[in-house]
Length: 168
Image 1 (cartoon, helix red, strand yellow):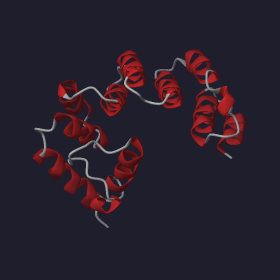
Image 2: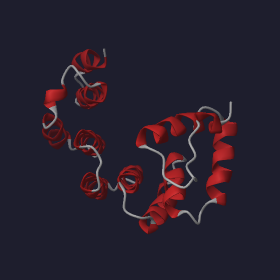
Image 3: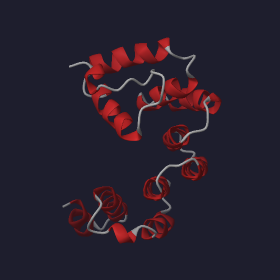
Image 4: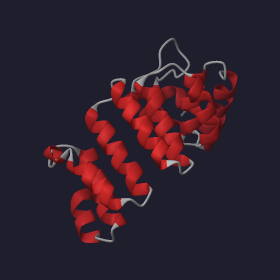
C-alpha cells in the first residue's frame, strides 16, 4: 500500500487536520517504500515551507524542519510541529514555547497540556510533567491520550504497576 492511500494531501491548498496528519504519519512509516516516496514528495515541495516542514518532522529530519517551519504562516499545525521538532533535537523549552503558541492559535487546550506533559517528561522534568498533567485530571476515565501520558509518566518514574493500570 502507498502512503497516498491515507487520502491525506499534505501539499494541497490547505494543511490537513491534525488527525489526518497523524494518519499520514502512520502510513508513511508503514513501509520503507512509503518513506522513500514521501521523502521524494517532500523534496519536490520545499517551496511550501509549512507543508515541507511538517513533512520533515514526519521523516524525523528535525533541524531541516525547524528551518522550514520558521518561514510558514502561523497556525496550530505550524507550532505543534515546531514543538515536535524541538523535542526531537532536545530543545524542550523551545518546544514548550511552541506549544503555548499552538494554543494561542487554536490548538485544543487538552492537546496543548498533553503535549507539554510529554515534552516535560522527555526532558526528565517529571514533577513539572505531573503538575501539567493534573490540569486535565477531569479527563480521567474518558480520554485515552490522557491515560497514555499518565502511564508514560508512571513508567518514567519506574512505577510499572501504575503504568500498566493506565495502559489498560
